[in-house]
Amino acid sequence: MTGIFIRSALVLTLIVLIGVNGFLAPPASAADATSFDRIDQYVTDQMDGSRIPGVSLAIVQGDRIVHSRGFGESGSTPITPQTPFAIGSLTKSFTALAIMQLVEDGKVALDDPVQRYVPWFEVADTGAAAQITVRHLLNQTSGLSRATGIRPLLEENDDTIEQYVRNLRDARLNRPVGESFEYSNANYVTLGLIVETVSGQQYGDYVRQHIFVPLEMKDSYASHEEGRRHGMSDLHQFWFGLPVKADSPNLPAQAPTGFLVASAEDMAHYLSMYLNEGSYQGRQILSPEGIATLLAPATNQFDRTLLGAEFTARYGMGWFNGPFGDSPAMWHLGELPTFNAWMVLLPETQQAVVVLLNAGNQVPLAGANQVFSRIPIGVTQILSGNEPPTGTSLSRFYTVFDLIVLVIVATQILALARLLRRTSISPRRPHSPRDGWAFARRTVPLAWEIGLGSLILLGYPALTGISWRGNFGATPDLVIVLLLVGGLWLATGITRIVYLVGPALDRSTEQRGPDITREAEAA
Image 1 (cartoon, rainbow, N blue to C red):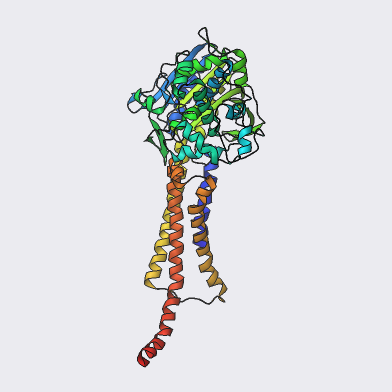
Image 2: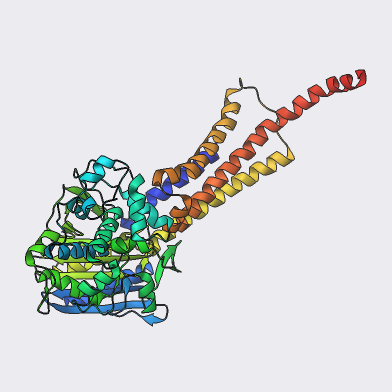
């Protein structure tokens, strides 16, 4: 019984040790030239420490790009500021901008119900569906849940935007309409459909004509598929500490919420437009009032966590409004298991930063993904004259993770092997339940193994609200570990049952043997 508690303690130790960042923290960068040199050195150090294949960076001051650089490679091709990257949920701000352009053209009103533009729009509560307005979708206060938005993304399908929105007729709201903020991709897919319905154009065509072209975003595309044809950076997912090239999913319905493609240089043009009240190179993309509406905090306050620190933010329309490092900012992140993207507006200094990374990791343990937020925060910290953050590199995290996983799996395999050997060589005589210690020594580990094995195999999908297939797409290495450990625990428990019950069955057969023989003779 001691063995089962030791193995369980190792599992808990995995979580605890990974969360201890101090003794794993790499030293701060020693670079001390100009702020841009320090930024470049900091990014390089963070990449090297975590094996991130490629990063693209641009910094804007007012209406000028004052610094841009590519780091690393995509395949064998060096990353440059013109390399297209997946930008994930930075796309939401483009969708919000498109809606606000249609508002200023008099084609959409923010407080109109969605059903005015999409008459068949429904959710499970038909009364609530009639109350949801365009503004609710933009502010993420419709009541649609995060789970509703993320599940189709991980399960993957080829639905169109319209098909996706039609499928919302079965979606249950997580809170009353307009009550409070809850981030959901479903809000912005629905906004994408409104763009299509009102403009008469496909979403990608609208964004290309009304945003990409006037902002001279020449290395930006409306889908991953189109981006791949024009040199989009490879995507990478970490498997036990190694970045592995990953496929780019083709999810047409997700275009308005997270599947645009852009280079860092193009994103700098885009951010410059916000810093200059909707104007770029003399072209007015949106009015100053429209830009102010997009950026203004419009929801209740809620807590966000970056680098383990909690802070209070609010949401505008495709933008978070709250601290970014030590600086007041408007910002957004975009992430999937295979990439990360960040954009930050620093209104006090009229600066903006975009950081695009061609790798991702979503293992939900401390230290597993902090480097992806540490890099953009470090850039803004150096810009503002502050020290950039340090912390656990991804490589060091995985050194601990892999070692502990190896010990857990090896220990469990040895325990199962010992039990199998005892079962096959010398099965024990069953003890009486009155022999309390012997009984507990056998049944407690059995209950523990069957219970925890079942809890992992059945409970993890229930906890995440996503199937094992969807979870594997998000965190393949963690899912492999959970399935392996859960399966080993169950196998050990089943073997223990055979070990305990087998002798009793043999003895029962022996006792019944003479009776069966006499019955046969009488017949």
